[in-house]
Image 1 (cartoon, rainbow, N blue to C red):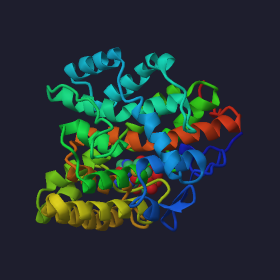
Image 2: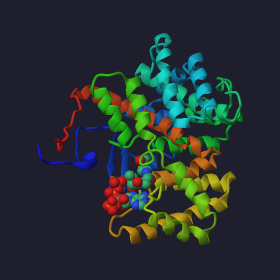
Image 3: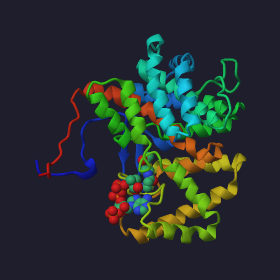
Length: 374
Ligand code: ACO
């Protein structure tokens, strides 16, 4: 028992049919579909079904899943009170989300069994995440949370449409819904990332899925995982104009800071998700957002890549998914505080499916530590 694998890097602990990350080729497969083919076309619900069932849904299966989600889009009063208290105290959005998801245990006894092939706890959370994220945002601004769109609405009933509507009460355009769907599908699963591993550890103890989802949210929050896009965008704003990029980034590296949105444990080439999101951001910015910001971000990216190669030669530090996540979600009008909570919505689809795989695996995850104490 002498080998130590810091960060468990390269350690394979199970098989999965959900996603495959090839960090050398820069390739990501989601249940057999290349991310660049699936993400720009599929809705989030289709991707969630794909992960759960290993194939895309037909129209009836999709309608059944959407009905299952719609029927659950309400919050227990105590969850709303928790969010009110959390926002009144200025608790960060991810902490409020974790608290609120945990409280959904109070909604479960009254919950109807799903007609679609999803676990009840998973659907209960998936359906309510847009409500929780939007309520946190609105309460933080001193506004009352909105009721979800009803079945008669023209904007459709998807997770993406609901979230955009619940934030500002405006019917979202088809382009904005498409952009958010592309984001949610892009990040819906990514093999054994830190939050998914956390979830699998909890499921492996035969604990419940809700506990595992709460643990995964806690892991996602960290700035080395899902917490990076807010700081990535703040860096672009701090730079402000192309001629300042090199100076600001050099100073950060000299202070020993990491450049947010760059580097990855597995990808040693350009993260394919960054490419998908860059294209989606470009389309969105061409339509209705600030094109100058997009051009500045491109310049910041090129400068960062050049300086990182200089700073850590041969380490192949490339753009990761978070850099263009920041730009796309900003283009959709979301504040930086919501970037990681929205990431959690997308990744929940993967977490639920990993929960099922891990439960079938059956083996308790219990690695070892080498004792070096007295
Ligand atoms: N800026 C500056 N230096 C970096 C960066 C960065 N963004 N990323 C890695 N490095 C440095 C490391 O400190 C390390 O230096 P050292 O060997 O002298 O200690 C060297 O480059 C190599 O690092 P890796 O081993 O490739 O990085 P690791 O696998 O440990 O970490 C991580 C990956 C955490 C993503 C890292 O690149 C990082 O902190 N990036 C910034 C945060 C970020 O963007 N996170 C989002 C990741 S995507 C996701 O989780 C959804």
